Image (cartoon, rainbow, N blue to C red; front, side):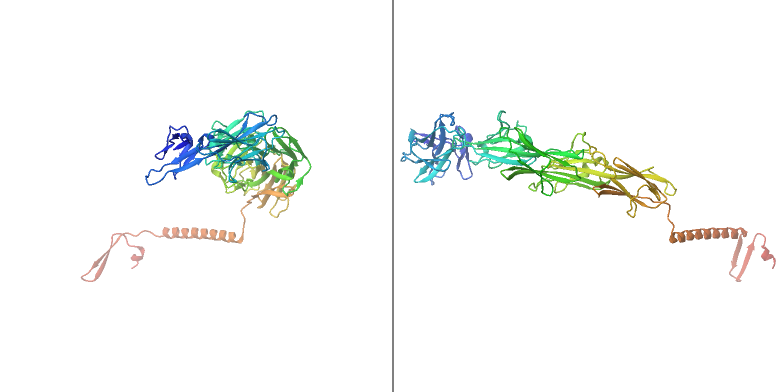
Length: 610
């Protein structure tokens, strides 16, 4: 039960449930301990509350709620141009008697107590105490005032007001992030629920503000709604931030008539660099709120992969929405560059650009590294983009840590470091891969082919070997003398020699004509900066080789064949000299132990002699 004064009683909760007919029903709740919860309290909620248990043996519990508010008069006064009065009010149950004077205390932004003219006690209504402070107009906006309600020298509650922002108590916070990070925009929570929070976004002062959070709920018609969320402290979380997220975010949390904080989100990004020439340019940009002053000179600092500062060939610029610095560098196979934004000799944010060239042979397993921040504990924010050449549309191979469906997806996966793994690489895999953390990986592949492709190794013929380096097609031609041919001893093959003839280099292809009768191995090497980046081998089979063992085996085979032929001939001749005999019947006479023979045909020549 609720009493604003002795004569009026309102029933807010009955039988453990909020009475829905109450005008405050949407702001009331009952927890597991039967405590009454009032969200987003106002001065009208002040009064006496009585909890009456259902058991007749238990006594009523009375709670008195005091609400302190602070507000300016007139409400729309401009403190930079005119005087105004701050009213500090304590709303209470009307049945309480008045306290003695000077139970309110005013402090300025330094914590110094304010006394004298303009401070007094004014009873406006039977249940409200007021204390007023008249403030002269200020040329600046950095002053604030605090009203405290004190009982027996003990401060019970306080409310603050900065006259520079009418009706607002703002705190300005500058935060810095890299593109792709998760940004947490802090807020000062004042209740157990986020239902009292609003977040307002402003890209520029002259642009229309956008409400991205309303009463603790993400506004779904926002194009960024899927990337926004609130934590339990009402802080706004923006996932996978981009340059378009930079600007001012205002958190509004109702707290006794005042609000909260401004967060300025600054985002650093290093633009794509396409090393199609010997030199290429990196651009480091800091995107920010449009109404800020230009960045001071020398706000940017460039470092190489050794940590040494690069002081030449860089150029700084500033515009209303961003500050940026450009760095022109020589093309190298693999390098890392770091851009830092410095303020007052302190590094506020830094970003890195990493360029990696990988060299493989067809059929290898390629591991493409991603320069993921160590603070990230999963690959759920990682994307991999692929291009075979500069003019080709970019294709997303991995989105938010998941390999996307494609003819190559069965050969792709991510390891625990979010590196992209490609198994059994082919010519179609060659190109540029970009991990979202400013990492460009160029996958190059070497192959050796022959012309004609199929020849008889037993014949004294010649074939031409072609050594090719397949790579990102916008990278230009390979420098002269990038390819070397060496034999099995490691000797370089130039001009014409025993069993070979060097055919020279055209673009990224080098040729060598060899004789198949020479059983030799030829190796093609791609060299950059006197360092072998990749090599491939070709083995000539040559004619069948002879050895003592093979000679013995051949002799045994021939001898065995001769013996088999001799035996076969002998058997045939022996059978040819014999005639087949007639049938001979033999009968045994058991009685006289005699044996008689019968021969129906003629006798043999041998028998006739007897």
